[in-house]
Length: 223
Image (cartoon, rainbow, N blue to C red; front, top):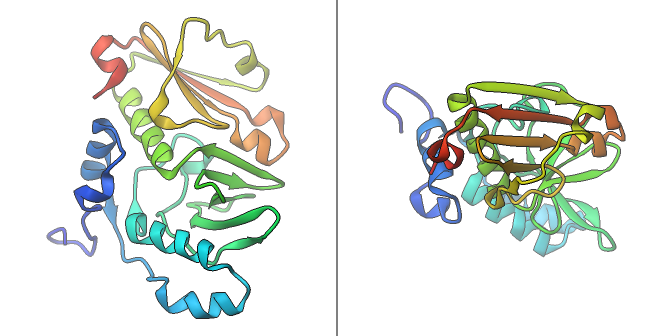
C-alpha cells in the first residue's frame, strides 16, 4: 500500500510485460490501483445467464492483470475510464462477446469495452475499436503525457481540418496499436488522431487531431 493512502500500488512488473519503457514508467509513476471486484464468484451465475466460459475467462484475465488501475485522464473521450474494471460480458455467438473496460469519468453517450478480439474501444451507436489491445490504450496515454510535457506547441484540429492534415513523411507509432485512432511521428512533431467518437456516434464532425510540435530527436520517442 502507498503510505498515507488507501491506494494499492500499480501492477507488478510482470503485469507490465508488453509495454514500452515509456509506458511502464508512466504506469509505475503516475498510476495507482484501487480495490477491484474479483469476478470468480460471478462465474456460475454468468454461465447460467448464457455467457460463454471463454468470454468469462477473458474478463477474469483482464481483471486480474488490470483491474483497479487508475491512470491520468486521456486528452480525449472525456478522459477515458475512471479505472480499468471488467464486468458482465455481453454479446452473441454470431458477433462475439464484449465486456466493460471501466466506468466513464463523466456521463457519456457511449461506454468503454474490450472487444471479442481483445481490442480496446468504445460503443455508442456502433462499435469503434480504438486500439488493438488495452496495452495500446495505455501506450497512447503515456505518449500523450510525454508529448504534452515536452512539446513547444500544441495545435488542436477538428472536423474537416483533420482530413486536410498532411502526414506525408510521418511514420505510424506502432506501440499504440492503432485501429480507429493512431499516432504518427514526424521530424520534429507527434500527431494524435482520434476518430473513434466520430465512428461510434456516427458524427464525422467529432474527429479530432492534436499536433505536438517542437520536439527534438530524443523527445520524439521518449523512451
